[in-house]
Every structure is written in C-alpha cells, then in structure tokens.
Image (cartoon, rainbow, N blue to C red; front, side, top):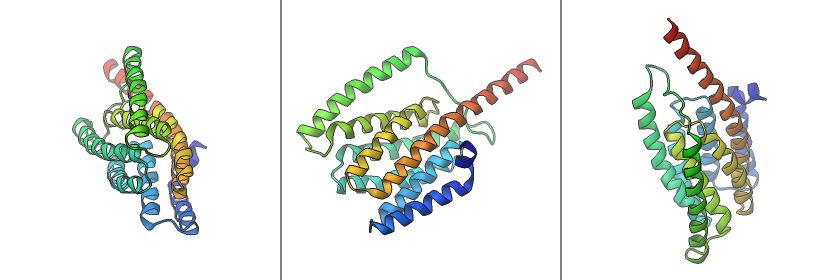
Length: 222
C-alpha cells in the first residue's frame, strides 16, 4: 500500500477522482480545485517536499471562504490560522534546512505531550460551547474538536514534529464525517484520501528519522 501512495500516479488518479465526483454532484468549481490542492499538499508533505507549502497555502486560504459559506465557523477560523501556520512553516523549514535537505524531524517528550493534551482538551470544551451558544454553528462540538486537533497539528507540522501526523489522522477521520454531513462531497474524498496519506506520512517520517539518526552516528564515528 505504501508504494502505491508514494507513486505520482496515485495523486494524479486521486485528483481526477475528486474532479469527476465534484462534477457529478454539481459542486462549485472552487470546491473541486481546493480539494485537489489539499490532496497534493498532503502528498508532498508526506514526501517532505518544500513545495507542499505552496499548495497548502492556496488550499487553506480558499477553505476560509468555503467553510464560512457552509456555516462551519470553527473550521473557517482553523483554515485562516492554518494558512498563517503554513506561511510560518515555510519560513521555519527554509531557515533550518541543511543544504538541499529539509530540517531534521523533532519529537516531544512525554511531559510535553501531557501539557499539550491538557491544553487541547480545555480548548475543545471552551470552543465547543462558544460555537454552540454564541455562533450557533452546525455540529459545534464535532467541528470544534476538528478545529483544535487541526490547529495543533498544523503548528506541530510547522516546527516539524513527528507527532503532527497522529493528530492529522484523527482530525482527517473526523473531518470525513463532518464534511459529509455538510454536503461537501468532493471534500469527503479529499479527507478520506488525506487520512490514508497521513498514515503513510507517519510511516515515511519515522523511516526518514531513522536514516537521519544513522547518518549522525556514522558522522560521529568517522
């Protein structure tokens, strides 16, 4: 499965599928284009390519308008902040890359993960209440959970923490249900494929992290 997901033909076929389904259900052109950009972004990110930021910024910048039009207020805020994080991530990766290689992958300590988990739990409850009673958005607690997970994941991604993929897997799986209930059918394909790519991204980054560690050991030995 990993070889299939890594092959360029996979993302080409996935993009064509999103276009065909979008055309069949008469989705707006913008929805279809953004779905394709979003998948290309995750696919390039899985392969640790700097170009992922270009497609990510274009996709999430467009999501702001799409989500507001669909009444998904929490997700619209997420898309706006994610765009900012992607711009920051592009800067951070460029600044910290080693020659032609991307920056080394980072890891959290158990204590740091506990801190983040507590913060995300509190943010989810507060955001859900705000979304339900103030903004009266659709699917308030489901959207707010996706929002908190996605925002945190995007920040971790910008700093190149391996754990960002764990959050993306959960967030994308939840988003499949959210966008389906909201009638954004091309995005159902996007989020479903993104879930698979996130799982593969975790595997790819782990493997590359191991290669980085071996290089360091060899360098120190020499």
